[in-house]
Length: 109
Image (cartoon, rainbow, N blue to C red; front, side, top):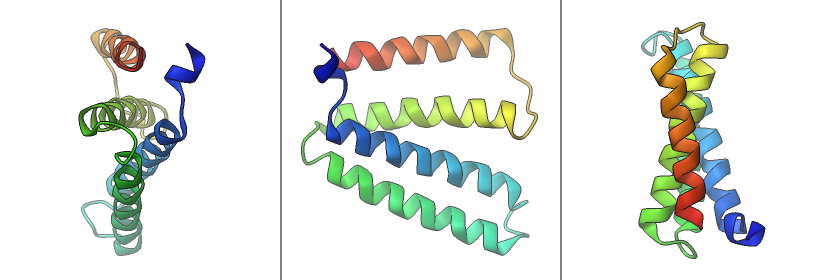
């Protein structure tokens, strides 16, 4: 069961999502591209993230890879906004995060 949840392709999707999360935080920090360096680094992160995702879909179905990437990205961006940027999260957001995590596990089973 553990081997079903994790594979090299899932690792690539996870790394792609981490880069996407970094890009989202950098975009917020770039203040609408007023800090151009942060904005361009964010764009580079997105480009690399899609490159990794394109490699992952060679082994994973596109729907599964994109769903995993989206869930990891939403989860990480939400938590990063809360922890790093001081954004407020309602109680229902934490329930949504728990449901996303359950969905990721169910998707891979």
